[in-house]
Image 1 (cartoon, rainbow, N blue to C red):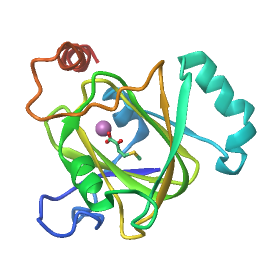
Image 2 (image 1 turned 30 degrees about the vertical axis):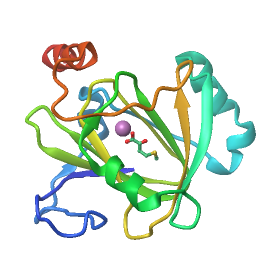
Image 3 (image 1 turned 90 degrees about the vertical axis):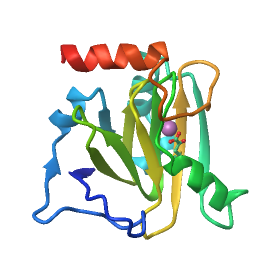
Image 4 (image 1 turned 180 degrees about the vertical axis):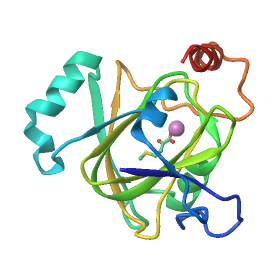
Length: 177
Ligand code: KMT
Ligand code: NI
């Protein structure tokens, strides 16, 4: 996993959009935003005690697997458009990359975009209430496990969505961190 601040050029969203010089973002910086990360062995995902431990400890009872590729995902282009709209959820968004690569963009405390490059074996959790978006990179292929505490709710609220409790709680968390 590697993360960096991005420019706001209107160029293809799949490009890295690194600043020059690059402004890297550390795992500690991400932790302060409530973003957490694990590295696992994706080849073992069907029977992995390490994954099971995380799921047990954090209550990630639900899981499914989504393949994001133009030949595999119905309404591919449309879905990619919605994923790239800045949004939040009322619950944590937990993703484990089983194959391929992708970018998750999250807003920092000053509302600047941080790009998180995810590859096979990377697992991430974005807190409820954080503004974020998702895009493919130039490889155009991702297979990801989606985890959830209890019954999944995929509903995304596009920005502005500041009136939700999840957003207010996240803002309070940022102030306290
Ligand atoms: C979301 O809500 O941002 C997503 O589900 C992203 C796509 S899942 C790898
Ligand atoms: Ni999301």
